[in-house]
Picture 1: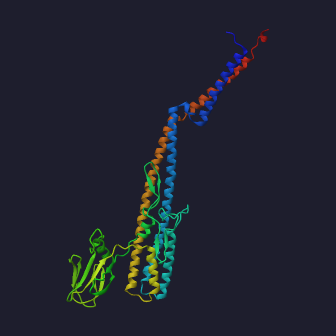
Picture 2 (picture 1 turned 90 degrees about the vertical axis):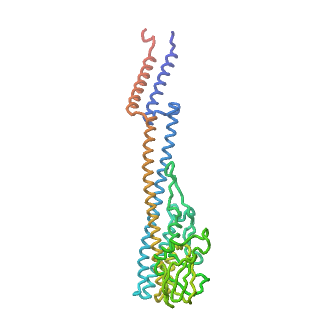
Picture 3 (picture 1 turned 180 degrees about the horizontal axis):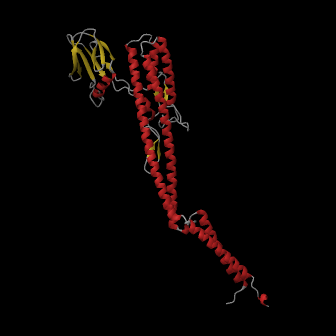
Length: 406
């Protein structure tokens, strides 16, 4: 077959270009560290790599979400720790305010300090995060959760909802405490109480002398109305001839004893002062469980201290009730902080699980697409030699001429 100069040039050029193509691919494989430079290299493998990349991107987002939730919880725990410390100071000052050895001026100075603590706690309850959101307002994070209304009372205007963030394929984690500021601060137990009914035929009043005793009785006997029938929480203190007895709404006698006109009658932590004759009664009902925002409890205490020059039973009752409110508020804070600790533990566990998944997916992706480094280097060197040989061969062939032999 006769080979023309054009054919020689074209065949050699094709060989050089093909060799160059293989060299470029070998170089790209080494640089990219993957055998799949384009889907056509391995359609099935390329599909798997896309899925692996999606999984890795999702795990990376979960990691960011996990850190975001932990940061939010840590911030809330710090705020609650500060509030708890402030309430501890208020508790100590409240005890001092009940000391009869202090003068009226001393007690007013204590009231001023308690008022400052109340303002500090109020400010902490309305803390914003770095995004400008109120952290204890629930889903209504664009407005302060606690405000003072026209009646001078502190009220909660947030809601009980809490934002959730996805931290794994199957788990959404709360960014705060369920119930938010309502559960932690607003829904704080206060001392139980009773209401003396207008059906009473005797006259009198009562005071709480043992809050723990009456709270226990209230917890064991108070029922919701409805569904229970009206009157289920009614009781009567009935006077006799030198005696008394306490009856429930069914007429069952719960307590009885001797009675002397003018002497108080004690029942389950309550002390009644009664004026009446035999057959007369004081009818009273258990009030629904009381709740009081700790800000209102401190505010009321300050007012009582500042207006009470002399100590009396009412003053002592307010001191005891405030101490109880502080104790309950600190208990709520302790439970909330414990719950945050539990959430952080869960987040740590989820983070470890996600990290394990990340390792497994990366390993699976490597098995499908990543190149063996030694093999890639060897292939590159081989293609470089092949390219050099093709180029040198073309140079020698292109120099052939019959004139060299004449």
